Length: 429
Image (tube, rainbow, N blue to C red; front, top):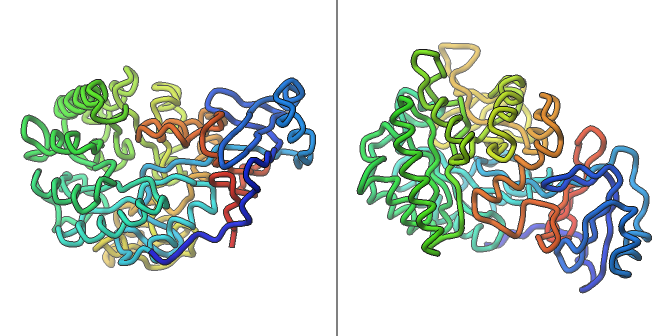
């Protein structure tokens, strides 16, 4: 790949650099804290007052650090499991790594330092070609892998997915997609009621066997059908981890509520199964808490019900993230963005068709989640630590000693001021 991320000068090897402010770790919200970075890793984290009792070099670095502006917060670099693009470029439509990198950098400059690049349902050749291209970005360390949203999805709950390209379960296509992605396919959204997805020899089994985590979504399943998929996948993932075949990973539900049969007291559908599974620790639910996909009360209720440790905040962003209203594409589907809301272009309905992805950055989602009444430490955990854990990543996702020094510096309104990835400033252009 020819494109490269512009960065500020790399700190001298071994040099300790400290940042001060309100520090959000996976467990704590430290009002007056500091983070010390060296050689691209987090060296020390804690209350500023405790630094004087730390290693002399750490104490000296914190003493040298400039006092923060009022309201300054230090968050971990955010981790997005579900992102179709931004900056005017969609991953399902990009044909080169240079194009796709535009979308990666759009989100990185806004605090998402680790992300999956999400595809949408498309014809076989397009899926394989896009997966191979995105694998180059993963090889270069620009993305953490690929998420395929489809094509084994419900026609009734397809949302913005192409109806002409939806398929019954096809393990041959799974194998080809895994091969094209060269080991970088991390998750795939599937509907349990679609023929060939669950059971022996089905898509779910093939995915786990290939090191890919199935995600339940775009489904019109009954509660019982959803429960079968969750049970099968949870057992398979646990078995793979125990056998040492893969790191510990967790199943997810793709953007809970959206693209699913609604929860009804006489027909609870997949939402009930997902909430119950999350509550017992068998599933992590994605929430697109951008103020469009879900009501604030829904976000708050889910977090309070299953706990922040069972929620992964995602953007479901598409090409229009960070861009003006207008016409865009999401794979083979035409999209119109009006007042920041992306919907399928529908000439028969001036309001547009189904919601077609999001236009927010993940830090915007964190801010909306906090505004909904979720504590900051929980919102940040669900946008960093939890999604990293879902992917089995132990080097990112939190301001923890030894992890990669990915930091987001914000003001008191959670607006980005500075981003570091691996201890190096991400240039904001």
